[in-house]
Image (cartoon, rainbow, N blue to C red; front, top):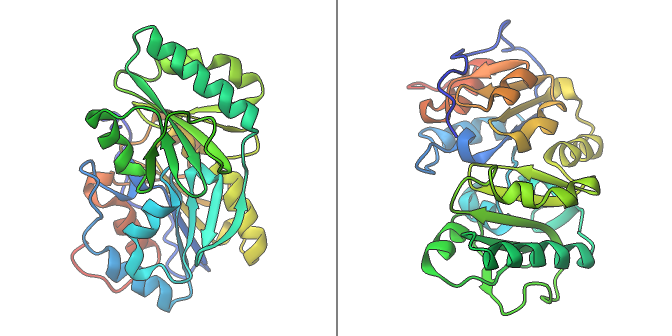
Length: 289
């Protein structure tokens, strides 16, 4: 979601061309991708240069693992995918960590959504399992939105009985999720995270689950410090992972709270902000950015 009043600052000061950067983590929607969901020009060249330097690149998104793996299929070997807002982390097809929800909680959230629908709300639940996502709505408009983020999804009669480990329940509201759906989920906030991840999306996860927690586990496993980590984000579900990096960047289009939380600024997602910042930050030999 764009915020035109956010600061427009291109690169950090001082330059970190000689810094020991080992890990780059970026959100996808509103951060790496432009508003039309397109990958930026120069991405594959920059990723190849990062790999040559031994810098690990990790997408961190609310998107499904299968969706992220498809997006980066040509360069996925060795890449760590922080999927489903940190609830499922995978490298080379092997799970590194996950944080499944209690099935009873999944049932309560789905039932809450059913009550909203019965009351006239234009909303639907996406029950996010490790193998697939599951939905009860089958209309074309809803499935089109689901398909953007969940490559593997199934329409089922009862999303509370799918026989899969559920790591997140995401809700899509065709209206403003902050005004209607999120308040209806307030009772869950006492025991779980209710995170608004976009204008139309809100996620219910365990309290222990977020992109930052997943990133910190990854840093410990790989022996990488916050000083060796670069993170880019634009929305509220990116806050915790910004805290896990000394080189934390808010996009120029970021939510005001993200701007306050990050140490540095990057150009907007529509201005190729992630790649432009990396090229300058790491002194990469890339032209045209």
